[in-house]
Image (cartoon, rainbow, N blue to C red; front, side, top):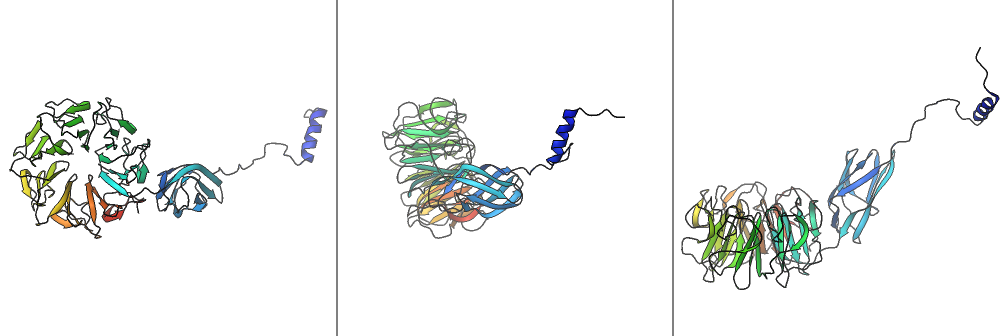
Amino acid sequence: MLPSLPTKAVAIAGSLAAAGAPLCCKDVTPPPPQVTVAGVSPANGPLSGGTSVTITGTNFVDVTSLTLGGNEIGNRAVVSATELRGTTPASTSSGAKDVVVTSSSHGSGTCTGCFSYVPPPALAAVVAAGLRYVCAVANTGAAYCWGFNTTGQLGNGSLANSSVPVAVSGGLTFSALVAGTDHTCALTSSEAAYCWGGNAFGALGNGSSTTSMVPVAVSGGVSFAALTAGSFHTCGLTSTGATYCWGANYLGQLGDGSTTDRSTPATVSGGLSLSAPVAGAYHNCGLTSAGAAYCWGHNYYGQLGDGSTTNSTTPVAVSGGLSFSTLATGWFHTCGLTSAGTAYCWGRNDIGQLGDGSTTDRAMPVTVSGGLSFSAVAGGYLHSCGLTTTGAAYCWGYNYFGQLGNGALTDSPIPVAVSRGVSFSVLTLGDHHTCGLASAGAVYCWGDNEYGQLGNGSTINSSSPVAVSGWP
């Protein structure tokens, strides 16, 4: 016989039974876990909407609503229980907005202020393409960048890629801007130089090798009239014609007679007064007042144009006796324009980037085919482009990503017309993408878009020009 319960225990058990409470361990099904929203990428976009975004979190099951700032995100797609995708709706006001995910079975979750609408920049005045990113200066002097951002080359204080323009931090206003492989530099109206991004070899010129996600002042107190950026080095020209370079120098690209890296500006040797320096990946070129071209640095493909393939740590004269009005450099090739508008190129030519109808490297200038008269030329990794006096754009060379802009993906060793009929005032070339500043101040890009370097809110390549978001 079991022992009887104490009187007090019996009373408690009776009262629980009367209240309908279980007398023992009855299974109770827990409520379903709540939706959580961790973040949105990219974290900003234009007021016009249309930015492709990815939302991450948990318990994205039975989703019935996905809103940004109270408005439904378009093209909603549930990729998994931890990822949603869609396109941002238009907004009537700038600033941070909440993203809310609602599920019929898991409630709702909010990411407070995790996406910001940015006001549109003013008309663009300057545009420069880097390796997989682009920067531009609006006519207000404010700088914007978009695309790849692994070393902070977008200058907005983060390392997140952006498929739409984001404002460079610091509130500085600039008159000029250049882009390299993973660093960017710009000039203020007072000729002060600032740089940001990768700095492993001292390309930021601030005396350190520390990467900076925001602009830092170039050391030395030198006032510059122009800048140019190579892969991991930078050069600047003073108003008196003196050229300085800093950063990586293992191939003599700083032109100071050594192969020693410099984290502050060093004077280019030779005593030449040069105008408009231009930087390739590992070489540089400049013009004398008489139009004679000089180059220095890496010369494996003949990009120095002196008839050899020997590197030079000091400037050497380009052969051929030509007088140029302007120069442009690709990664491993160089181009120049005569005052008559005839384009010449030299250096690497395996994909037809010299535009002479061949794929033969040239250690001296050769004429670009087609008989076109250009007002400007520009070089990229394996392609080149030029502008006619009417603003029509032509490109030649590698075209796997559509960087020639003619609606095709076929390489061309001679110039082909860029489609859409946009009239450009400036062209700038990255590795596999091209951008142009239209005469009306809008910016267009085409080619590779893996990291959003076309700036149109997507990561889809385009073989013809697409408008960068935010510029009219």
